[in-house]
Amino acid sequence: MRFPGHLLEQASSLANLEKGRPRQASLRRAVSTAYYALFHLLTTAAVANWKTSRQRHALARVFEHANMHEACKKTNDKSFLNPNHANVKHLKHIANTFMQLQQHRHTADYDNSKRWTRTEVLAPISNWHKMPLKGG
Amino acid sequence: MSTLPQKRALSRYRKRLNQRGKRLAGDAPDSAQIRATVKTRDNGFVPYIPGVLANTVKLDANVNRATRALAGDVVHVYYEIGLDLIGNPSIFFKVVLTDQASRPGKLRDVAQRVALKLMNEVKTDQEGVHAYFNFRSRSEQEKMKDPTWV
Image (cartoon, rainbow over the protein chains, first blue to last red):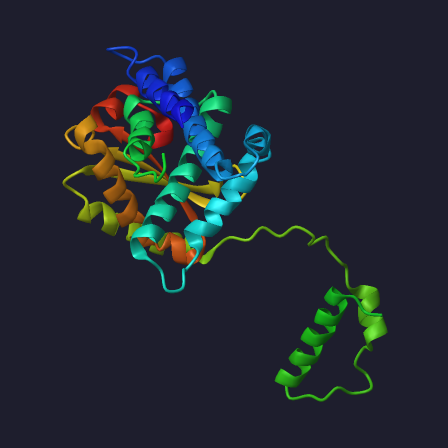
């Protein structure tokens, strides 16, 4: 899982690239990179136990952004029966962070009217930077 | 066969007559006459607005209550209602934090606490509405003078 970790490091570096006033390009790329870090982490984790190892990368390509968003929304809204509270909290935190980052990424990549600040970018990045990802 | 709007129109007509204490009499228009006068509309797409977003007075009060409770870290909370990139009804919070609360060492904890408080007060999860958050520091907001955050 080194690639997602490196992407996340890159996102943090981009957000802090300029010492003074950050460039919008740096901030927007930071948001986008942070989202893809989480996206690749989740898809890689999902196919990690696929028996035929050479098929794993191809299988990871099957995941679609919109479907993952819907799955995260269902997870976030779901009431679990007899839950292990720590695991449920952990799962919902990942689902919510994914949705937040995906929405931010969409804005960062396509909405030129939006002006980003460093705090706006660092808040979602820091949110998943310390996420206790099992097996990560 | 009557269409749904026609059946509804007939039902409304009968209800009005009953309310006035009248019985359906021979001079009442029959369903064929009503069908001829009812104009159908295209209601194929009717947007659904969750109650929590439609009641803006209550929504304002809930957001203000959360903001007061978070006064140590939060300067102001703006919000917008809209659809997210998938098309789900959502609320987009724009939170101005104090400069102290925006420091890198505190930002993660503050952001999580603020998000949780706002979601609990507005009851977004119970209403099936997703909440999205953007955080800025007070000094950033003052420099930006961003009209979309006012």
